[in-house]
Image (cartoon, rainbow, N blue to C red; front, side, top):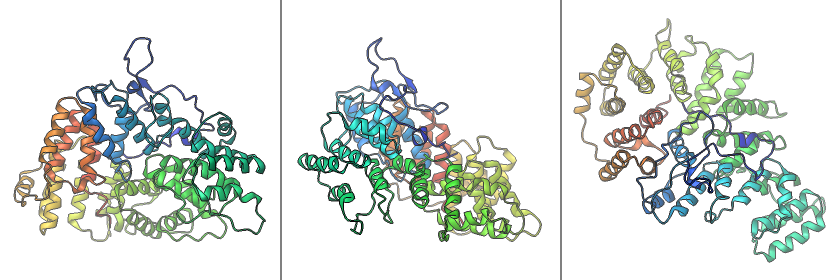
Length: 536
């Protein structure tokens, strides 16, 4: 459900400015240059937005939405929606600010970790987005991937700007030409580069061996390569949360300490840029490091599964602890669930392991493995299994039904009746009613008892005046303004759709279905149910 393969940009042996052809184009003008709006960057098999997604929108309406949209701390469903909007080819919207909309598209691509696509798009713009340079983005990524030779070829070009001044100094250090490095420092200072750490690092090879050197910095590809060349000591907060593309590149670099690579892989995995097998392999390498003692719950759980002497009960307990520790947000929970997906598949279902069955069922939901989620739920009924909270059990079964494209009527009725029966107390009645509302949004009919429970709930006072915004979203969807609808939806979900009132969620799910994003609407519904919050 939430996984995506490690993107080619992080594994590529080289990344040059001669980028490959875009994945799709929209014809906009005969043999003339292709309109940048019509360039798509989706990989084979990825679903696209309609090519007319901007056609019914005005640029002066789109710009505020694009400038305010979150690009960090997104849920997996939010990230899927935003990626689909900015990676898909489309016809140009109406309005005088189309170039500004393109610049915002490039910025969003960059902040999502799609640096390769961002650099390609920036190269087609009349002006770069504020604070970004397409060629600099491409060269910086080359450095992050360790492609020194290719990056330093560009340093010899007569480019102006602070990045290029710093690049010349870094390339001199990489070539171990201290004289050229010192000259480049003087040039950078005259070009207005204000970065004391950078100057200290570039000049440090000329210091005595016992002289104190600055800590490493991994916030750009340029600083990463400089720090790696000089062997600078990484600080505790070595990973930059605003650069998932950089984290992905760092995770693949053999020259970095494996502990740093594991931290980088965590951010990349949460951003959907790292596959689970690569992530898991890095953890195994970390445990093999001489003198390493696992301390974090994830490390302890990996060790339990890698240790052939560990028993099923120990493995299950430590895996449950790792999953609970990751339940701060759905992106992290999904990443850790994928990390242990193969381990969980091999874990037998017996009285020692099924005490954590509902936690494991939620992890399987996060990894998109609905059949295995159901298997863990059913395992709570095996002989000698410990008692289970009946409401939690019914809620997990209701979440599994929410995630399924098709349901059996008898199964639906049984789960709904269990939810109503065991929903003791207002909090649990509210949880059950919310799940029934999400069922309704996905055309899963609650039973009469379920509908009665919904009707008995007190009115939701937390709508926050969103009624008119919801009407605007529905109107955008009906007008085929799909891009505008998605951006407006993201302005409401804001990293946690479970905070939204039920009526808003139903309208959002309906709007997503209207624009052809039914696949993501089901994922968003699961997140709106807060499935990761109840991990025990």
